[in-house]
Structure formats: C-alpha cells, structure tokens
Length: 435
Image 1 (cartoon, helix red, strand yellow):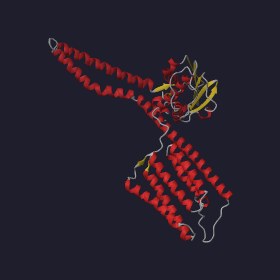
Image 2: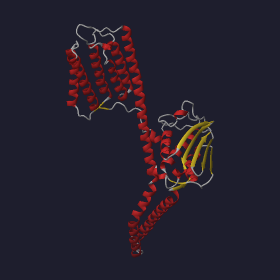
Image 3: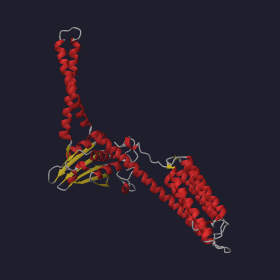
Image 4: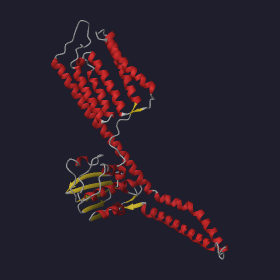
C-alpha cells in the first residue's frame, strides 16, 4: 500500500551545488593561501619561490572573480561544471605544494579537502575521478625537487622513509575520508527521502479521513438551493399538470430534484454514521478495518483479541496507526505461505498487537536493520507475483507508529513476528489524536 509513494522517492540527488557555495570556499582558500605565503616569505623571511606562488593564487582569485561577476549568486552548477571547478582547485593546490616542499610541507593534508567536498556533493563517478586525481597529485608531491621554505642557506632534507610514511598517511586519509563522507551523505539522503515519503503517506491518509467531513459540508451547502428548486418545480407541476407540451418535462424535473434530495440525505446520514461509529474505534474494530483489505490475499487469517481488565480500549481514528498497522499486515500477507496470525492483548497499562506469518522470516543480516530506510525486509514468497518496493514500507510504518507512542520489536519465530505495543493511555480516545 506504500508503493505509489515510494516510487516517487529517488536514491541519487547529488550534483546540484550552488555556485555561491563553491565561490565562498574558493575565496576562503585564496585568503588562507595568500596569508600563509606572505607570512612565510616576509614575516619569517624564509626562502621560497614567491612569484610563482603568488601567480598560482592570483589565477584562483581571477577565476573566482570571473564566476562572481558572470553568474548570479543563486546559480546552480551541473555536476560536470562542479567537477571541473573542484578539479581546478585540486590542481592549483597541488602545484602550490609542489613548489613549496611537496610532502614535506605541513599543509599537504589539505589536498583531502577537495575529495571530501566531491564525495559530499557530486555523483560517485565524478568523486572517484577526483580521488584518483588526488592520489596522483600526492604521488607527484613525493617527487618534488623543491625544498621546504626555510632560512636562507639551509635546506631541510626529509628522509625517504619518512616521506614514504607521509605519503601512506595522506593516501589513507583520502581513502578514509572518501568512504566516511560517502556513507554519511548517503544515509542522510536516505533518511531525508524516507521522511518525505512518510509525510506524503500521512497527508494522504489524513485527507482520506477528512472526506466524510467534505461530504457533509457539500450536503449542507447544496441542501438549501436544492430545496428551493424542489419547491419551484412542484409549483410549476401544479400549474402545468395538464399542459401537453411541458407537463411531462415538469414532472421529470420534480422527480429528479427529489432524487437529488435523497442522495444528499444519504450523504448526510453516512457522515453522521461515520461520525458516530467510525471516529471512535474499539480495538477489535481497529484490527478488523486494518485486516479487511488483505483477507483475499492469504489462505488463512487468524485474529485473537484478549484482555485482562479495564474493558476494551477505544481510540480515535488515527491515520498514522491505521496506515502503519495496515503496512505491517500487508507485509505479512505478502510473505506468508498460508497463515497470518494477529493477536491483540490489553490490560490496565498496555495495549499490544502482534502480527505473525508462516513465511521464511527475516535473514540474519537484515534483522538488526529492520526499519531503516531503503532496506528490503526479506526475500519475497516465490508464489507471490506482486512487485517489491524500495524498502520504505516498514520504515514508514515504524515511523508513523512510533509517532503514536508505540514501541516495535522484530523477531523470527519460524516466520516473522512484529510486536507493536502502546501505553494504554495513548490508545484511548482523548489522547490518540495528539500524534
């Protein structure tokens, strides 16, 4: 029942960076590089090729200035353009480091920054290309013939073994940073997409639950003009009853106006019935409403309701609870071989609903991650031809049910078992609507 929503959610949304973001990062780089170069050359009076260094910094500043003047701050750049800009930044930084000592330069680890930005913002094929470029740049730095800027007449020699260790450290940092940022970014995107799907589902369920109110409002608004039409039609019928040309038409008008009044009367009565009997749902009625759409798809549906004390809980119609439980039951029906068991139990303090199927259960690697977005819960029953979704079903169900105050547990008992448990007060009529 979640598939129309999950199909709207995509896994890959990277690559749409604002130009202003990249421009600001570049100005920060220009400022930092300029301050460092001037401090080293004139503040510390170290010997260094200051003119080539300043030329490289000026090239970055000039390119940034052209972008700032040519495009609006809100301009979004394509992945290819962003790849080119970040690649140029990486090349410029590598050239600066190459001229100022290579891997002996204490700022050499900054080469990781461009890779981190790319894995956070660009599609993976561009990110891996920049990672390969960065590794090549680090390897070139290891071969730099330029000494580290130092006092005139003194050349700092870095032992090859130490230089190799620095190379290993930066390469390891590149790999770890790329993997870590990629995983964090992917998980953040998945959570964002899944929560958006959850909100869409909840809004749809809430709209459906409000249709009865719309029907009542329509019946009320149309009742007065229709009553006027009916009165006028009856007056015309009395006046033209013997008219051979218009008598039948007027009688037809009277009968159709009466039919419209009957339809509006039924709409009003349905709305009142819904208000009286459907807005408040006893636990057994709640379960029956959730189960009813799925009975035709399983051989045997067993329902048991038991209680210790306090009478059966009665809660308000909560779209989140209805959708969440319905999704769990649908999931059990899809994977069951023959039987789905639904057991509800209540006492003075808690209400618990357990859904168990006789399918294959959850695989050991999936069970600890059940409820995470974009995780397919378990292999489908081969006899079931219905297509699978994106793995958002249980995430949406879990999120909506937890918003209503429920706790969910997932386990294997031959088949799969999902237990949903609320504090009783959260299921009662005066509290259920708050979620």
